[in-house]
Length: 566
Image (cartoon, rainbow, N blue to C red; front, side):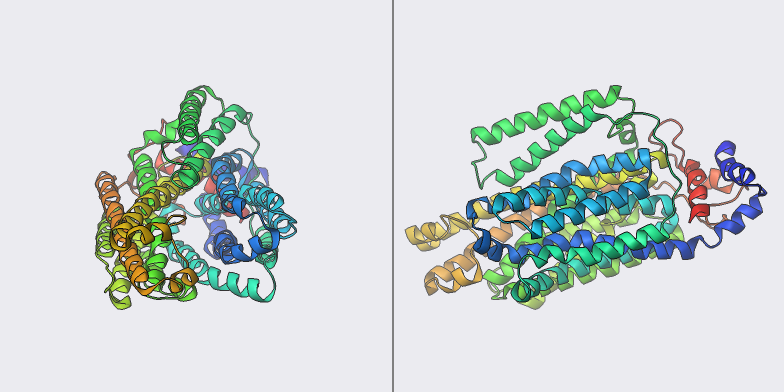
């Protein structure tokens, strides 16, 4: 511990300055203001990452009408998802090895390049390829933001910024479809991609100007074999969840082959990681019980959250008669509740250093909210469904950022990037599995109910897809439309009931989380990162170490240097 705390002083001596601890703390004093400026730049980047899919989705029908290739439409989304998921852990590792700022700026540039090329696409094949480029950059955006925050701000102080991040996400979720529809109607679908350029330019300029981090020099080579195996494994799993039950039957040869390829690739990846000098995903981080539990909870939270985001608008349009635009606005109770609770939980965590209560309360509210949503039927009012959504949103608000915070607090500073990327990856994979499994259950229930209530005609209506848009729904005869509304109600009941069961698994995991003190400013610490008094090495040393030497207070050394650089 003494050696780590000595590094900032040694650097000061090299510059001809005193290494006296009080002088170091004086230098750190401007850190909160500097971090707030950096956070503004990072929030712009989060907005850039979150808005993209929300804006592009409303433009899809127009894109198909212009470029054709309806049969390849799903690949516009799939290519983006594959590239994002597969590149996420690689971006995290590159940031750990070569420094976060350069890697982060590179991901922004690649994302903007993919946006420009997507806007210039002349056919569906080009659009799919350019969306993959865009997804490749997107994989580094959120991971870069989380890892940079993890390096600049101690876990204890990081809670203050949770509400801000969740607020930006909520704004993107609410405003994205509205902005996308407006842009497509008045400027054309290409501007759904070009709109990223001004936001990206602002993010690039601000990050370049205000973010100053120590440069790193990698001591080992990139684990190319591990990266390739992980990419194949993740891509196979994402394709299974994307194609299963839609493009191909779950028991088809293609799906079985993809499952086999994914399993073999991931097993081989684990074997390679044990021997690699610089593993893409160091397995020792999973020795931390808290990190492993946060990965599980993050996966399960992604599973139910994105399922809810998919089926709630569908229920509101088909059963409650909302328009596509209004169904997005009707999600406000869930998103606002999530934002408010996230803000409160962040402030509470900062002031007390306690966090275990939030995974437990969050999973309880999540289970309760999903169960309440599963009870909706054709007579449920918008007010009642809004209350149910608010309960679910409160649960998500307790979980969204706490999972990342605890995961980052469970590793050494040198593994901050891979910890952030792993937490993001597990949530992404959870959302893929959630949408696929809940979607399969929903479609099966809708088709069965339609056949029961409308006979052969009902089967024909849902033969191509169990999800009808507003125009198709209005064209149905009244008895068939009534049958479809009951079918959608039954489908959402099954999907949300499954979600509540999955939530129970997350609740069980939450009970095993250890209350490891968060590193950073506490009641006994006089400075932002503590002092040489030794209080941090005692009260703030996490007992749940992910690996030998991964003491909770090992991080302040590098972060002190960051404070000087900022």
